Image (cartoon, rainbow, N blue to C red; front, side, top):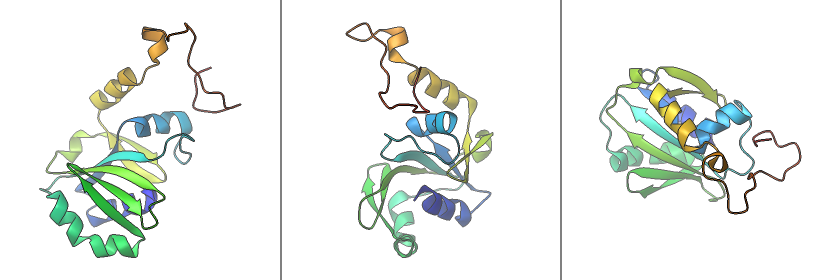
Length: 157
């Protein structure tokens, strides 16, 4: 799904459009790599950013038929769109915005086979926000929180 919709977004204007993963989707790249998603993460959260002005509702209306032909629809939720497959069994939270300086997002990576971009302050903020809370505050039982899945690649030892 991310590969389809993200590829559509980047293909509309490769030099003017970028994808900036946010929240746990950023951590996914570092913990699980380019192709494997966190097993517990239900969706991908990302900003689809343009260097040109963008009005979300009218922009998506212009592309409704193309998205539907690809098997996707959307629900507007304020400043973002929930992109979903037509059976509504998979979703992505996407914030569309523009104009922004896409050149400022000068750190590149790949997620699900697509080019994604970041900027340094974003990565530092994400690392700070998602650092293990038990290292800072401790949990209520004084134990480290950890996953119970044997051999899971995205958990702290």
